[in-house]
Image (tube, rainbow, N blue to C red; front, side, top):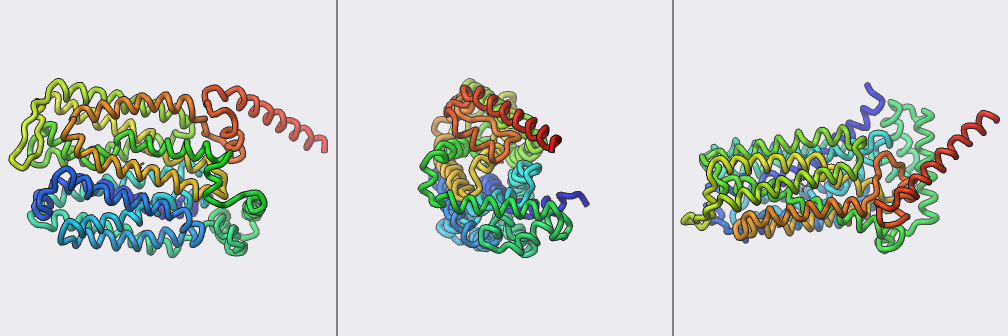
Length: 502
Ligand code: BGC
């Protein structure tokens, strides 16, 4: 067994939370196009669809805001377990829905659970892991999200062949299975050692560290060393830190909060969830013909999303955060622009009897649009998908990390909510205009990242304090950080020489 096997196991189990997050995101897209679903809920119009899609994200917003307090008070482990119970309740209500109100309430309740998971899982993972695999472990959560979306798309695809209400009830109910698996597995997972130490449960923390780092030997040097390091960090934080939300608005944390909120908001403003929630309708509207073609195209979308996340997991630490985000924005912007131009040049709008819009785009251009959407999803998956979660999780000091991340995560869900609500209306009203809006946002985001976001790859937490307390103009602050690096390298040389003399 490798030395980090236990850590990967614990991080991997927690990532099932990401799977639930993704499953619920992916689930609704194809269900919206199922005839049995539409007739059961009396053909909801674009406002009705917006509400049904977005109530989940409204729940996620509330859930993520509560998670900061919950995870500090009752532990990361118990918060994850409680989220599974809430999620199961919400999924059961959705599965058994008898009317639109029940469906909407079910989605809101499931959202509360997903919101808590989306903030607690990365914090739990990062507190479990040694620093050399921390980034990768947090990325596992994003990969699990993409797997959840993928599996949901294909379950939807399989179920749409069923000729009864079971076509949509089965996918809604089946999400309970991973929630139960996560709940039961968490019984066997340890508490976060940092949370234990913060609650003066030192012996338990030592045992957890031994399980994670030394195959159970509580006296192993690396266990004692890490235990003492965390104890010391907690002691210093208790002396100096204010643990309230007010600290988030003051120097030196305020700048990081703004950067964290903006990076999470921009992740949603890539428009990724327009393609996750509504791609089936867009494919259909764009003229992809045949009964199964739009659903199938959505299934492929999920595969592209999952596969394109892998390079980021492997290499984001080498590429750096800034370059990855700027290149991702460029890819997203260009693909949106091509979609906008193609649609504008070829659309001929007509309306069906039920009011749904057809753009009647000829075959060639409609395939180009589908390919562009795949390239957009791939650009997102390699960049904004993982990095928007990694960046906030690494820039805050330990004592405020959970509260700060609950705010940045809530910003992500708020924008997700707004986009889910307004985009079905905009897709219908301004068609290619929406692509153009997203293209402009993506090009603007290149400038924002360039000007304001310092590079954080391969930096320790101690470095973060230096990096985020200089000029807010990231592109101008390089000299100061280079000087800091040089001074530190010199100091290391001096230390080495001194230890040789001694
Ligand atoms: C985003 C989700 C999105 C998913 C797509 C996540 O990072 O937060 O909103 O649906 O990526 O893979």
